[in-house]
Length: 233
Image 1 (tube, rainbow, N blue to C red):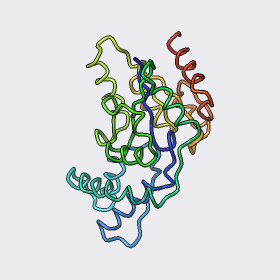
Image 2 (cartoon, rainbow, N blue to C red):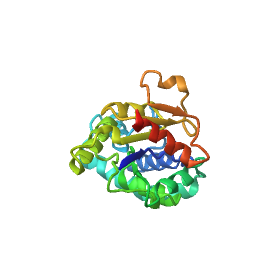
Image 3 (cartoon, one colour):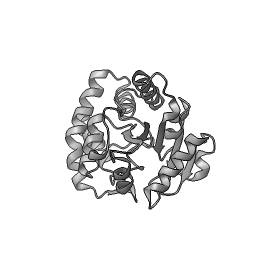
């Protein structure tokens, strides 16, 4: 079995800014702020890293309890913001996930995302995509602020299941340079899909992902053939 480690935001779907809006509202309410915005891009970062950097910026320090409390509030606010914001599933995503979710597939849909487990579930449930994934083999953003550490966790879990397995049995699928860096941390291949990304091909020159494509193919078999070729090398 090979594992497809999908990112969510910008790779599977665009939430229309719902996640960002939920975080901003929670931060404003919690700290009694009239206005707030992020000073860094949220793309490719873990939710725990985003929250910790904000709390440190506002208070000069951050502890685990404060981060956990804000994330709980974020999870409560996110469904409301998902309803308010007009997002969409990206092109060919659902047919691709459905294809690899078939019982006889040699590839398993999993997640490696900066979203927390709860945040990921809420987004995928909203867009009716949760049914296509194995959460038991997925890795989420509350595990570490460092996205590259998420890759290490994924590799460790794979080894615990099969000591003969290789990091190359994990295929990372994302849309940002951070996704490629994450894969590179364990020597795993990374497929970048640009459709929902705010990046251009040249932005990946330094991180050198395995493949960059503009959009998921119309026929999932084409993507499967691309993966099969990887394992023939």
